[in-house]
Image (cartoon, rainbow, N blue to C red):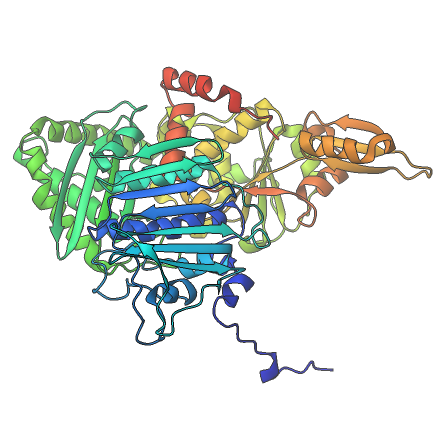
Length: 636
């Protein structure tokens, strides 16, 4: 019998109800990332006031009741009656989706919040929100509870009631996330600090103060050097070849600010922003920087007599670390996440600024241009050697996949297949016996993979384990990398839950991060989480009953809960100690296993920590260990 399906099956969610019903559609998740996204939405509104020239102070406070307060000294949200709704514009902003002053040229010339979800979504996902507005000599106050329901009665005219008088201007927003919606409501101070520091770097002259009422902690973020200070922080643990080169300009109504420096690294790193929003996947502004820099340096090379023929852009960019921040009046992004800028006019504007404003630096500091060109010529020689290595690597690809190391899945549909990278032959044998042969492939690796942070791609591809891994993935490496050719929907790193296993996992992640970062950025890389303990229970029958504990905390909880019911506790020293059934049940079965997706929330932080912990310099690594020794946790 066919189930009835007609107009009565179609629901219409009014107002903010849709946000509470499907919060992930608006903030990405109800986990830690989504929780902190609420702060970013409110802070971005204050930063937009700074971009408009009306705000130079923002204070962010974690309050005693775990709510967040964001206070700025901008113009204050408009409080007059909105002509279309008949009530205060401030209430419109906090109760109606996609309402704000950033959809035309009247309120803001540049805005980072235009494509954000807005204050109304923060309101929808909060237990309460309070708004205090200082404007036109008056203090206005509004409050919402239980997902955006107003509790303050408006004046008969539709205006907010006046709470008092003031001589200042600005907006204060307080909100308490709804713990019935979020998986956690615990704020991560380090995450907040990173974002505020980044905002201070991107907004020269802006002062941001972070306070924690619970602990008395306070920190101020202010950077007069702007993104130059940002770049200095990024490269402080690297060997640099030039001083910081910075320039800025305006083209076609787009403001462009660039800071760059060359290091001894083999790769390039360009961190990009549009209207203070991180564009982690780059976009047209990054393309403009690359093309402009290629044209400019080839021009200097021929003028100085260093070059006879033009160099390729990738050679010129070897060792480049750059930060580019543009202000665009109407940016177009690819997707709601704003990960990639798509505005076609941004490329031309950035290229114009590079060609017209960068020479102001190089004409004075001509040695910087010479150093860049000399480094590019070295990179050309190295690239030719790497090209030969890649040709050799690709010619061996078929042989490497059939030499016995890779046990492939039966299916040839990438979307349903997954690759387990397993530590050692013993665990590899168990994984092969316990796997789903149709969808799961097993690749055992012997020993520790080469640390690629200390070597070039050419040398890395001479390593047999690395050759085998990239051959198994099928998507190439370096410049020839093509994620569309990836043979698996999941790449699962499965190592022992000990120090050696953690080291092997970090080496593999460094390899993928440096030579195939798209695999991580696009969410294909996972960490398998094997159990630490098998807890056997006392039974009266012959059948053994047991539970698995995946951490010391879980084991402690089991001991507290089960007590004398526990007969024995077995500690797994490695994956090889498990039989095939145990490995399948705990680590490989999609219905029962635990996987952790490898994600990068902060591109600058990820690059810096990789350089510190895996790079050639010993002193920064030792200092990091000294500074964070007390933060160390047992690896699981």
